[in-house]
Image (cartoon, rainbow, N blue to C red; front, side, top):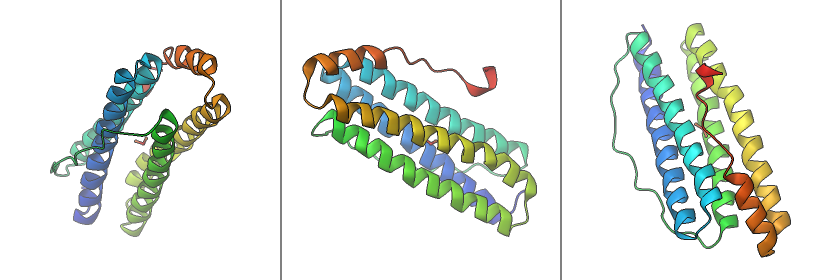
Length: 169
Ligand code: FEO
């Protein structure tokens, strides 16, 4: 069994992951409206990854005999000034999620729940990858600047991303 305190914190994180998915889906729709279908695809895959993060935690809480309590998902933003503004927000959001994961690990350690600590290490590693991949896209976007040919090429590149559930790798 997991403690009530950690159970509540995991439920809170499930909500945060679902909100991340919702936010990235909203960003995907924004890119679609701007005819940047490659960026739209990249954000959609990002949204799928967040849903995977939520469901992996959902399954873990159930497996440990905890109680899932789902809360309302906050309405995501739906307008941005530029593709750069979107990616800057993604980078900030991922830094925020990393802090939340670190807090969860601290909670698991406080509760002396070693199984949860091990489980959460997957998310610690995942956040390193997420921050790196977002930072890579952000840096490329800064290099492209207002060059429309560069933007077109980058959009083609972003179209190649596919969602692969980590368990199937
Ligand atoms: Fe679930 Fe992007 O962190």
